[in-house]
Length: 417
Image (tube, rainbow, N blue to C red):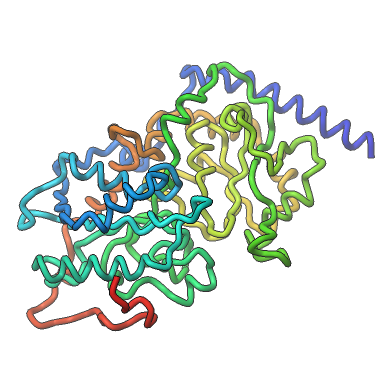
């Protein structure tokens, strides 16, 4: 047993030393690699001039008043809905003439209803969204002509517009019926899932760019940690019997690798968390209650190869970011083999992934900076909307035609908000 542990330790040190030395050049900018093919071109697209967006001017109770009541909404991982609104208000794609708009945006802060611990409560969200849609349908003619098919909404809840944080209940609810024709911009993405409709734009969760910028370390720092993870492995308060949280994948990571010297994993969240990611070769990005988390953003920004453990996940801007080239995908059932999977990746493959991650356009696409910058997540969302143009013939309804059932959905959702 001691010989095995010693051998693993020596392997870890050798791998990390070599990769750390090689990565110094990558992080100093001497070795970067342009994203090949159409993906690189798409990331660098400029959406200005390709679409026009009309922003509905809603009463503040749907957005700004909620934020004023609880400013914490600006700092949680669901804050993309707030920053997208702010961005569009001053964006060059905004039009004040709805007759020339390609898209219509309804700014509703559905996640800005927080518990004392800072988690969003989704229970009022369906009624809030219904109320906003009823308002724009009554006061403007544009919703009714398409029943939302040329409208988009930012819905960053755990399971998007299913508006629940528990998957089983989210599936039972389904997407809010009034949003069935709209384009949803959401963090949740999983193939063949009730809560991801065709045509949705999957985006990264919000991670504070300024905070990450403040924790950058010298670019020549070696990556001396082979595998890194900080977070829960079990959620005993919400899943006391175990096995449901993260579909058991996180528990498997802990049980199999808690004593493995290649793995720096813990529930502790040290003040050096961001610095530690910059010292790591691989960063685990397992599912939790939902498939996504800010770790994916942090890994990309800090050049740590994301190890994605979430079966059938649909990743942010998947039509623009070459996730297969920059990340490692491990099936949930293969977690017990994680050490052999990662140590068997050839060094040249690891170095190429690091070179791609060092490309500034890759990092920029994952962030919502203030103010906005070319190529950032705001612009990737607009690029996604622009690629859907021109609208097809099925977008606009014939006079008197109706496609949505306004009384569908749970009875509680039909109550006034």
